Image (cartoon, rainbow, N blue to C red; front, side, top):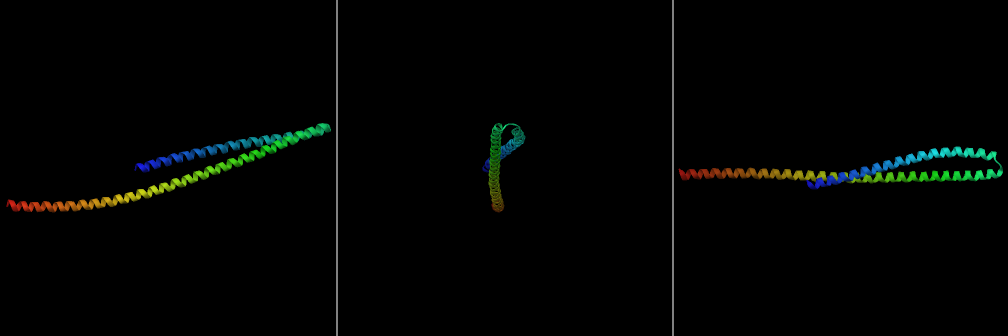
Amino acid sequence: MTYSTDRLDRMEALLASTIEGLARTESLIAETRQVTDSNARAIEAWGGRIEDGIAEAEEVSSSMSANTNRRMEEAIADTVQMIASLGQQQQEAAQRAEQHKAEADQRFEVFLAEARADRAEMRAAREQSDRDRALNESEHRAFRETFQTMLAEIARLWQRVAG
């Protein structure tokens, strides 16, 4: 019984660890979503800046236009780099979440298999206990019958000696 209790305690501890890992994964996904939303707003803001830059470029001289174009290209490159980085972060977060889920599923399957094995072991022990109890009852019944027969024989002999 102690062995099963220890195993159940271990299983509960592993399940708690798995649940904590899933909670951390969900938190990480939520943070990634917040960063993604924030970056999307930043991208929209950059879009407005790019449009302003185009209007400014048309108003200034050709030398200023070249300078403005260079700055816009840098802003676009930065934005593209930021989007690529966000995409990579999101993909990595999704992969980590899938990995955590797969690990949790695997742990659950192991726990389930162990629980089934424990249940089968307990069932076998109970069946053996039932067989042992039935055998003990049968032996006890035979002992009582033999003892009663002996007492009857002693009583018969006593009557013979006394009488």
